[in-house]
Image 1 (cartoon, rainbow, N blue to C red):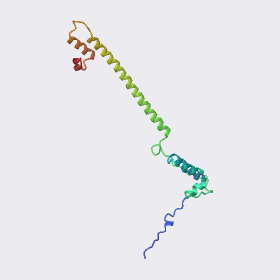
Image 2 (image 1 turned 120 degrees about the horizontal axis):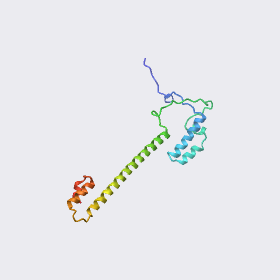
Image 3 (image 1 turned 60 degrees about the horizontal axis):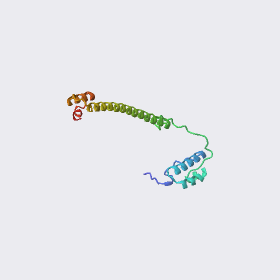
Length: 162
């Protein structure tokens, strides 16, 4: 004979819900208040939660408080930083270190560019001296050769245009 099973919604989940301790109820009430105030930004509801006792909050959530449950705690599994959250202080320190390294690199680039700018200004001053030289015996080709020497052989087309 086949087995007949009846569905009973009251017995669908036969596991009984665990009761909270008073400390758990108080802690969860405080968490709910902070969450409602900070994340949901509902001050009225947060004030309502704050005005409840731990027993009232537990009853609203459909939980019972078992006064017999007390200081028995279960130790959490220790998680390495790679598995869980990183230490926020170490993360902030790493971020600050990277920012400082980037800032130092940018300062080095600025100093390098400033040195290049001074060198180019000196070259331009030398070129201006050659161009403004009023010596009659100074041929235009001689001036171009002098400018080419100042530039160090680079940018010959630009020297020819000046």
